[in-house]
Image 1 (tube, helix red, strand yellow):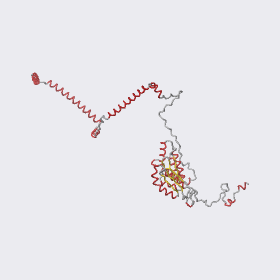
Image 2 (image 1 turned 135 degrees about the horizontal axis):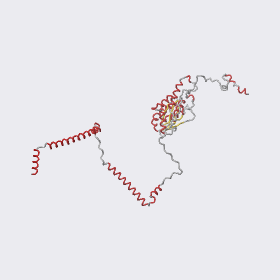
Image 3 (image 1 turned 90 degrees about the vertical axis):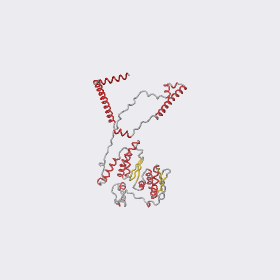
Length: 393
């Protein structure tokens, strides 16, 4: 019985393709399976592949922000023409702020409605219409990465999003060149377009960037892989020895210079907060009569009015205070020409000259009086006598 079960089938034996093992026991020759065929090639889907069309209608709708309304109104005719060639109807509703795509009787490709859904999604995320229309091609896919919820702190989120774009968009341009994908950062999402392999790489770069890993590490790795792919000798070898290995560095946080004193554990609970009634009892206001309370309130109000009146009177008096005279251009010029040090030196020099002049005059006067006293003659005495007589007469 075991021999019958293990025996290969007759048609397989006749074909002569059985290898004798369990793996190739039921393998038969396929006339279309030749060495030159590309198994991964995607053949274009034409109208001849599905001449009868679709059985049911499918539709998708998406909302768009208010600031995209003007642009969408301008490019909508070109979008309508592109979708019409695929047999898909589209509608732009400016009242609700939505875009809708649906299949028609002319639709022959069942997957084109998914492509149309991705098209309106990209248009709502600020992707330009000429770039978004490339999604209708068979070899182009899209991915919208939501980065808004990956970082809680808003300031940290803005810094990491800017790190993803780089100065003047240089980091984003490098990612596009190495992955062959189109990348657009808009608000809380990142829109990507390209092949499946490139989209997978771009998503990993974006998520790692939001987890505080700089995109430059991935860019270096992609550059090395691109150079290694050019060498056919390394096609079947591991590239781990060529790729850089970055170690995570735990940067110690700076300790605060002043450390506040912690609360001491006490046996008794903290004192309760004093209520309004307790404060009135402590001040004695609680035991006052209603008339006394009214009088106190009136006195406080009068005091506040006096303060307000004095403040308003002070404001009115300020209007009568003469403002300081502004210096003219000529005075400013003189001040700039003659410095403060020069003025002080000139004043000291003039004061010194005045004191010297006064001392010289005193010395001269003293010398004249002394010479007049010594050299006094009879004519002087005679003149004095005549003056005296005239005064007596």
